[in-house]
Length: 317
View 1 (cartoon, rainbow, N blue to C red):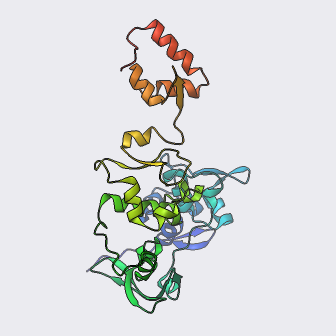
View 2 (cartoon, helix red, strand yellow; view 1 turned 120 degrees about the vertical axis):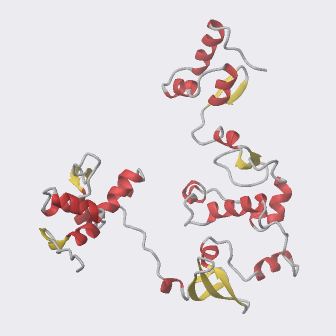
View 3 (cartoon, helix red, strand yellow; view 1 turned 90 degrees about the horizontal axis):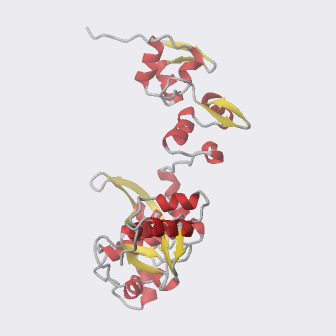
């Protein structure tokens, strides 16, 4: 005879709840809730997400420290959502208690128009493991397209738009899977797709792609040329500038890491270089010059003392 498990109901401020209901409400794994119950935890204490030290988590909210359950009752967010934002994702401030982004249902997309495409129906393809949209273009053509490509802004017509702006029947350039074409697509996504996780660092800051590159991959390839190697990617010389000729180059990961918004540059002996470059030239330990600058000390005087006091710190030509 199969063994059956008796349901356990706990009295909480939300009424009688089973252990499974408590797990769903608090966002804590059911097995953890069950173990806490057998260890003597009762009532609202079972609803509280716990830290590694098995103590209730308290956060500053509205000027005072409150438990996650208290914040949840005010904001409407689940305690686990707040805890995950704070502990796992490192979010602080007002964003910690911002409303959750709603997940769109299939019905949400049907009838929506993206560019020239109107979505007629949407279905999931088990073979491709993607949602496929049946779309009607403004030119009258009906076509099936991946939902991801439509949402990302990569496909906004049946192909008629590119034919119009190029003035020729065929638009195939046979480079869709090349490193250069992928770089071009990713730049457009970062600059114009608000759903991209990188959008806030690019399009959200006002960084855009020039019209010459935006409307034609061939123009981008003509100006940039092919990537020198697989280790090179597109880098903006002025990190606050746009993606345009004269401000972009093919650069290695090391070059890009030394050309960020938080990079500190030092001008010494008429030469301007990043702290990492000076450290390599002087034979210093990594981040030593950067820490000098962050402490508000004079980096130029620091380099002078090194060169005068220690002969081993010399420039490599």
